[in-house]
Length: 474
Image (cartoon, rainbow, N blue to C red; front, side, top):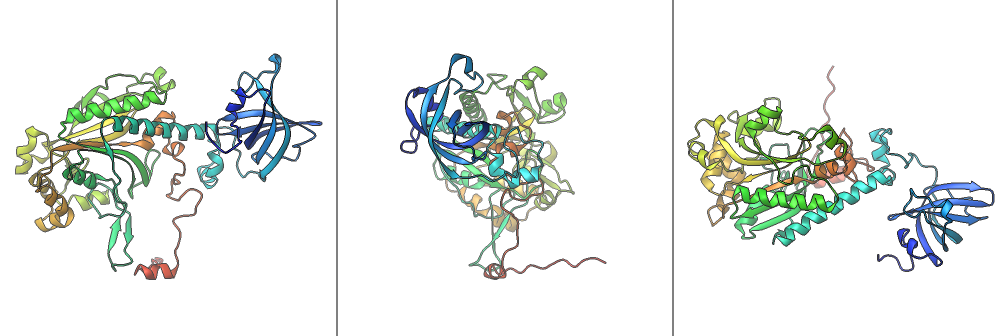
């Protein structure tokens, strides 16, 4: 394990009995016994007991220190079998305080769930020191690495797409960004890389993926936030079963790589109609109570979704997207099932049109969603006509996509997997916040930093924006 010159990691000390080492880390615990002071020193690999004679009495817990000392084997009767380094201890020769910790505003031992969310997120840099939180972040990292390994082995190319883009119809409100150079005009932050990844298929990339940051201005809840991360992929010349088989193999590889347990080696497949009839929802949990307690992961596919639904008049984004009273169930860039193509183009029996959409569900959550896409310009144009858009509105909204589809775009499809949700499930948690380093609060405020917050008048002037305060109603 490579690291700082001369530094020994805690777990490496197990192999250095009889040698002098330099350790650096945090004071996890401290116990004074007269002339002897015992501390547990913690680094990213674990913790080890260190013993000082007439020294270290002034140390405070969670201070950062450097220790030089002798690695000694502990007597058999004193071995701590609950600690990976329980067979050794460090006889401290000298030490340096690198940063002394004052009294902590929150404790870092325990799971922290008894502390209010606002306080935990205000001091997130302390909250993340908990073994539970640290393990969740490490598992997330290893899981993403395993996904990447699989995709690279299958000849996928990782491509980044823009964060400043155009406002699109993807089912939620956009976060918009004013342009300093073009007065009165705005960028939008991406709800997903949907259009760019389809344009990459036109570009001949054929197999694309990225770990994509997506931003949607939608209502917050335990398994959804403004910002989220997804594993986004797209494949050219692939049928629905090809994409599903690739994704299933990738997920199984990654879950096993991080030590997860699968309920089924082959993920069961339900139609949307079957899912509703059997489970009452298109997201369901197939595990037994015993499997739930054991943290087993139960994946399943749901296919053959309705393409359109009636607009929910309480949902502003749906009202905006569905001008005719009809809006898409998943995204407007999907293709209808081949047997429904004719009635789609004819705009007939709209509520009966099924799409080539497939969702991956796990333990009662939607873990991912994708589809075979429309690659024929007339199919995409018709989707927007069904939603009540004029020819000019269609051109203004997706004209760039229609133009791309007229210069040799292959049939293609893909999926986006919710990495935050999958990391949450792997950690056996019920809130996304437990698997994200710096999540927002339930009221939409950032962790640690105080945002949203006002900006200066100079900044507003640069952006050609003025803030108008609402008048108080009498």
